[in-house]
Length: 365
Image (cartoon, rainbow, N blue to C red):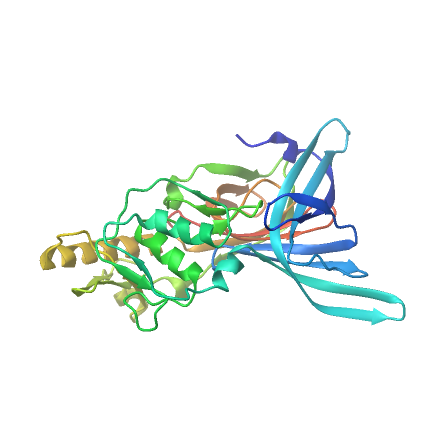
């Protein structure tokens, strides 16, 4: 249920807290930060970054920085506190103007710790082991807190990470984690605002509940401008799916060559191919079954690619929505009435906590 507090008017202020990396406890307030921007992007592996402006110096050692939004209704009768993110801090530049010192710090979500790390020796996941449990174990061993959905998926063949040329060679621990999660039908790992690593089962966009409805009228804080796009060049009409294991490999193909289809090879006049790779098949799968599975998966992906066609970009005052969440958008002024899923959000640490949201439509065009 959406919190109606965010449909009213509120005053926004921000707190910046130092967090002990070892204990996870907040140890003090950082008071010399003047503003900044937080970016969450579903299309990047680290998921969230930020930059903040400060005066004087900003040195919190190896600790983390957590940012809070403190919102108070203009009537003064109600309030909310929301964590906006927990970050690693880098201070690459300082400007000096006489006695005045100021700078901009680059912030990274805690997945950066996994992206910067690799295995010292071969790390093997045996056939029959639970893929999600092993992904969680890698993150926990790196000192991160993990919240994972339950999964019964197990590998049908052993995977080896951390060895150049190995059976499942990857460049870092985050890539290994995401490969295991993908095999289990999970989303790529992401972090919540408290810095915990979330491993969640994938849900088709059309099946996700709406977390918010942006619609004109009372309580709508959307600015009256938006960009509505349809990216025709991103629509594939041929999909390849490759399943490769130590024993065999197979390619499935799906082609839209229907003259009555707006996006087919016939209508467009050329092939637009997208390829997907998977590295695990159910144990005991025969060659014919593997081929059928690959073809079915290719057709499924060809259809789903058609459902992410329209993109909208708009700005609203803060509402409790994150990347991956489904939301509605209805505006008679802008002549838009569709369901979307948020892909990228930029949060500005200023009055009203404005959010610039880029979302994609998962309905038919």
